[in-house]
Amino acid sequence: MDFKFTPENLERINAEIKKYPKKQSAVMAALYIAQEQNGYITTEVMKEIADILDMHPHDVLGVVTFYTMYHQKPMGKYHIQVCTNVSCMLRGGYDIWNQIKDKLGIDNMQVTQDGKFSLEEVECMGSCGTAPMFAINEDYFENLTKEKVNEILDSLKNTN
Amino acid sequence: MEKIVLPDIKDFHKLEVYLQHGGYSAAKKAFGQSSDDIIDQVKRSGLRGRGGAAFLTGLKWSFMPKTTDKPKYLCVNGDESEPGSFKDRQIFEYNPHQLIEGIIITCYAIGAKVAYIYIRGEYHKWIKLMQKALDDAYAAGYVGEKMKEKFGTDFYCDIYIHKGAGAYICGEESALMNSIEGKRGYPRVKPPFPAQNGLWGCPTTINNVETITNVPPIINKGWEWFASIGEPKHPGTILFGVSGHVNKPGVYELPSGTLLTDIIYNYAGGVPGNKKILCVIPGGSSMPPLRGDQIEGVKMDAESLKAAGSAIGTGGIMVMDEDTDLVKVLARIAHFYHHESCGQCTPCREGTGWLEKILKRLIAGKGSVSDLDLLITVANQIEGNTICALGEAAAWPVKFMVERFRDYFEQRVSKEISLPVANKVHSMRHTAIPVEEIKH
Image (cartoon, rainbow over all chains, first blue to last red; front, side, top):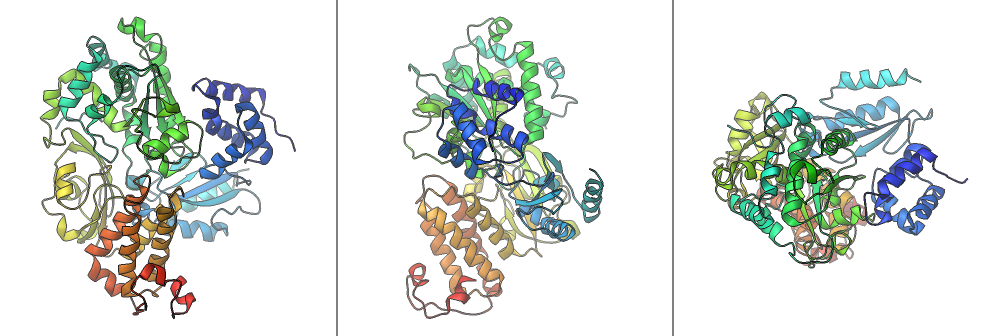
């Protein structure tokens, strides 16, 4: 299955390339754009990015596997990232983690059957002063309580 | 007390408000002086890096070669991934223009035409806020080629944001440069140092976001003013992030040298339920933990903390009350460094894994007193034997927590397993004890 960037996304990648003296520096941005368009990073995506940035596909793969925010398999529509690092742990981060695991019936890096939710245990997100927290896709939800977590998850369950 | 980095001014993040309060006047003033003068003023101010190592900023700038055919670069480190640190995001949100102004002054001082602000990928919101401020600054002519006209100088520079993608190690300066180059975030062997051989092999300076944000006020109000704030050897204010078991967690900007107990009990409102403090990590999870009975009289600056047996780090203060399970906390810390080890150096890649395994064995009640010695042995074998400081970051919390809370840890060990050979690391493979019990 071939992968091609949409013309708009290609434009965005070209704008990223202009920030640097060498094309390769745009690889992280290109991967984000690809993930946004395709949902996850496939071999074809890496080949296409390698072509655009004059890289070897293996070097693109090296970048994909090094950074935790690139996914090589589809994640849920709502990707829930729960911090359990020390500052969150001290304020109930693991309670939140277990609550979500039980509620959704999935474990770390798993996706619910309907493809709606996925779960990831993440390292410190810089929310220590507003712990415990999770992020759903790009948004932070802070100072969480059991009730708040239920409320957020229920409201998302009811969306399409 | 005057706040330098996060002033209490409404809408200070907006360009027009920033300008009303003298914004970009420090840059104007700086461009009227020689770059050497600027470096000299920052040197005399005593400003030290706020990213962890507390290195003298002016001295770092002076390492940049004066004569070179190569382009020079500035990297602004906003990777902010140290557990317990959440200060840079406040700057992106509440004071982005002072950061931008600091960047253009720094670029002028070191002769860089391009600066990259490296922001961790998870900070989507703060990247957008920072980009908005940057766009406004560009449009108004405070950044980019229009600077020439705006400031009436020959100098101009460009600023770009580089978004990370989830890797703690990219906060290490050479890993950060590799990441900007579009590579895996592997730290580089030093020397050569970035000032000689940095981004794309060119002279590069890397400074923390908070460090750079201190620069405009130093230029505007003079180095004498800055040097007079707080502790003379580590002057200025520091953004202290207080988290864990306190009533009012948050970021507090206070003069360096403020008492740790003052920060915890007065500013952060003390410990919930008036419980006693068991342990405090004063500078983010990489720094040596202090016992609750060691924090009295400890001042929060690089020199005082060193004397107290820890380090200032990023100023992230993690407070743990008397009911905290320290073994679990330490195992969580060990898991973090194991997860974030880039894997280049064997002592770190393998050692962090062993630290985590041994600590998890203690949690499972299958540990022994000799495991405590083993933890220290493994930590000692990581420390000093790696390319970058992640080795120390992984080793210190384990080594110092086990040493300083020896009695506590010994109580948690349920049964004695003494290993038959003196060299405990190697004996793991040739022991009479069933492997299952050890591996747990």
